Length: 255
Length: 227
Image (tube, each protein chain N blue to C red):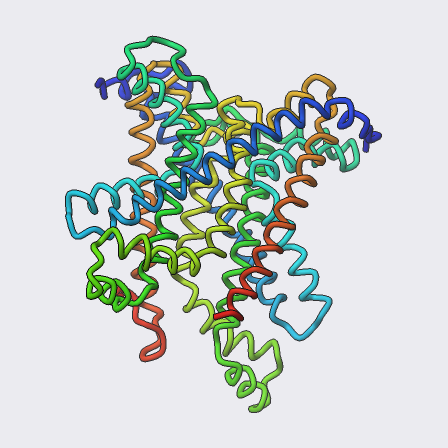
């Protein structure tokens, strides 16, 4: 085993192989964080839509979830990256493919353009939104009906009931499953390597190809993934404890 | 927007069908292997013997912490190395399909072991105790009392995971194995018709997975009523 290889100068980027891993980690985090914002926002809207007393909204939301859940993530990635620019007006497609700025000026210089990054974020965000929507829906539906009725009875409108009664409870209940969705988005972001985003997994493979130190390169990336997983789990446990409603939900950390 | 030409799908029907067969073969082997080894892993995790439960938990948590693609890369790298160490053969002792199969069985067994563990833990303690009281040993109580009930409880979750597994088979694309998606990609490169081919792949996956998920939901409703 030869761990020192990671400190050797890499052939590009003006950094060591360890620098490549750091750059990969940066893009993994960047793709995941941006995708999570989309997933949380769209997923919340779709999840709420599945519970409202309006048949058209429920139907549209169900269609969204079924569509995004039943096509493999990798295929969706190709649909966004390869197919989408071809089916929109030609000028727009060409702009996406050719005129999006490259990312060489950023602190962690990347060999890909903003279009690869955008496609990966859109794909991952809208895919994860379908999963988040299911969590939000089940959180809302796990609440006793009386909560909504009581809210309406004291004169709140339905949007007010969602804003002040249903959602504050539902989001607390679904913190544990949302933690696993959050971890899933980090892991799924590796799919972006198929369209050229040099995230962590891609960088570790690239190092293995350049140095033939496959074991060291993969181990380093694996350890980083484990570190991310543990950090997220601890952070979410702390969050769960902080926002727990006394006496209602099993308090976080207590198991 | 360019003209669509769907005849390309018909022209490459044989290559696409071969790719689909590869995907289905990988799916079937990974499903059977995943459930078999997943059961063993779950039993190991629940064992009282620490030398068994700790490594099993470590393996499951490790696999679940890394991306599926990373796991595929790992086993794609490790399998030929380990096999050639045991057989003494050098080089191409195992093909890419075998490596992919090993990777998928390993990853799926970790995922399935969590489902099966939850299923076993859903069985009341009194059940194995009653089995012991009747004179059964550990193996008999597991095989005849606990596991049949556990598998029945977790059938819907296991089938849902099977649908996810079928979708995940497309990930072998990263090791250039020609599955359904790989065949479509290849045909797309040859003809420049990637739009039609990728849309076709998406529609096929959607129809299969949507129908399967719907069937699982029906089954779940029926199981719920009969209990």
